[in-house]
Amino acid sequence: MLSKKAVKASLFASMLTIAGFMPLQASAACDLVSTKDNSPLNIKIVDTDTPEAKEFLTTCVNPYTKLYAADANAAKKGKSRFGYYSCTQCHGPNGDGQVAVAITDDRWQYAKHVTDKGMFETIAGGSNGGMFAWHQQVSNNPELIPTDDILKIIGWLRTQYKGGGDKPWLK
Image (cartoon, rainbow, N blue to C red):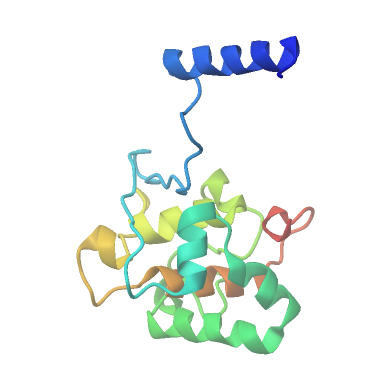
């Protein structure tokens, strides 16, 4: 038999759900938004995604960030992807800036870059500051970057961080 408290809590949750203030069930998706205009970035899990990419698209947590912070040898995969996709042309060989801004210091062009989710959104969907959409699905171009490679690049960039203070991406 349920206690009065349990019944009240259950009724309250039901009322919130009906009123639309609480979802019927928790969302299992990571809600990505465009850096350009905050519209939804519709990046879906596809058959070719790695388990790490699927995890990120579900949780918004980049599994490579902590892995690469702990293993410099593994982080080389991210640096390799950074060079392969010519990120170096604008951001320099180590992300310190060249034609485009540095992405390894604490002077973020967009405040959301303090999170891996925010940085992913900018790389995947582009920005109003001159960067175009690099993600295969967003650009509708299979020759561009899959989710997993963007995550590896971000994981490596975090190992190159030269700013001070807290590193929220490692929490």
